[in-house]
Image 1 (cartoon, rainbow, N blue to C red):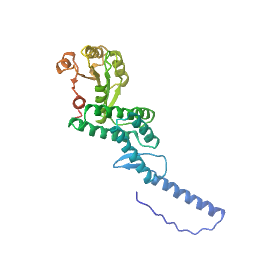
Image 2: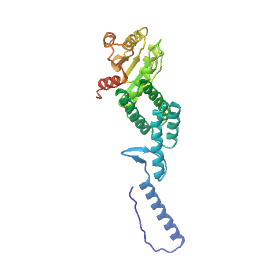
Image 3: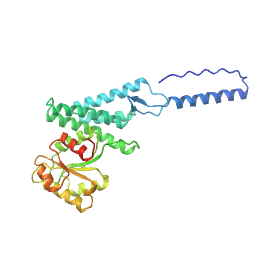
Image 4: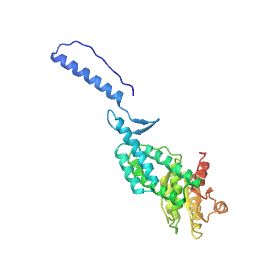
Length: 277
């Protein structure tokens, strides 16, 4: 930020009127300085931190950048408690939720690339996804309480169907979608069709995704499509399905909009369905 130097020359008698004039001039100059210098620290073109003060020091900028680095490192350590603690600290220090999400997304994208290239293994991908969820727990509450809006590419409701308690695949899909700029509402595991339908009514998502890891539970995906049709919601939301026993043929049979065999294919599918590719 460029500095502005203002030189004022005046001669005035120190009468009561003179004192009043000096105070008035100083007040005007102070107000002008505050308006000129009221700002947020910027990181590139995006706001990094926002504090309700006149000037934020260079030290505050470094502090903000360090917390973001620590969050990325904590994701690499697969520590959800640490990421949650750091996210809470970041918010207390004034970092914007959107900036935290962006940094986390970049780290998850890098981890996803390493997994697809065989550099890291599934257990590490799962650990990173779990650690990222620690950040999102904190940010969801903060975003809901604040007026700040994060511009997502789309909203997706995800869940594992009734009778199925598997969560790893769903959680990885959720994290990779978040990393690619989508809002994800995860309703959890062992969820009945009614839970999916109610959440669709409540959240009005672009897509609802149902995961089934067992052949005995995959019929719940078919019931979901039927229920959405019955409730008059089918033409308002896309349905995607996934899970170990799921195939493209099953997808066509039940009338779902798409099937993905892994998290990265799920992202491509979602982007295609929402015309984001």
